[in-house]
Length: 245
Image (cartoon, rainbow, N blue to C red; front, side, top):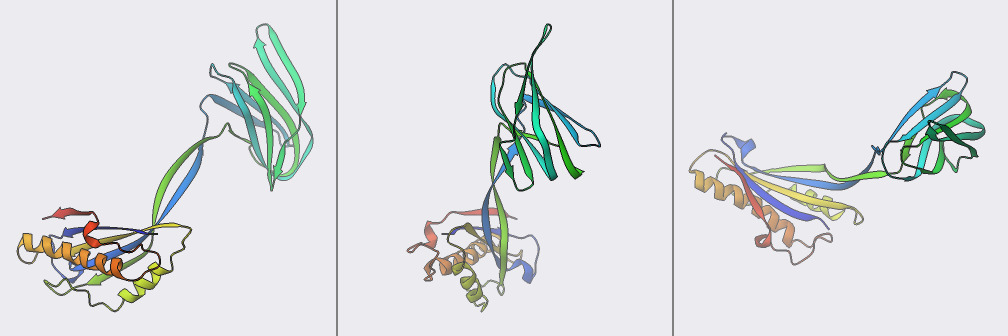
């Protein structure tokens, strides 16, 4: 269900546009992104004929498991993947083996290697037949970063005569419908902000700006809206005087 928050502000300017209440319906989205693992570095060599070599170096002192290379294909893989693990360069000690891509998902080909030990270099060589040759990417081990983003999906403004705080705007019914139809499986919040302009006493204007915001919050809180929990009283909400000039 949406959470309601409110704030108010006294504008240093005058005019109808500063005697209003703004209502924003805000969608809360949790976004995950994949960050590169800075313990690994990699280089890619691509020939015009479609020969690919990927070199992965473990720069850390740790054993890194489940290393995955992703390659987008507008074509097909030819044969298997030759792999060489360089265990030591002086003296040269290598381990050669053959691996197969473990997953083909849409146009993405995934090549996995179980472990890369500390200081080891891994070389993968394979060929593709494709009209366009894309650069493969190191995508695992996966380091995820999650952040919460807010997106304003609807915004309404309700205007008041000088000194008035009562809502008399017929469009408030449209706002009620919008809130009532919000999807129950998504997260939203409703931000209410009251304004007063610079006409008159600053303390009176602060009270008016606050009461304008509270008037709408109370209306939202006392209506029988399916998505807002009742009872949900306006005087229990947290408001913030953002700016009073």
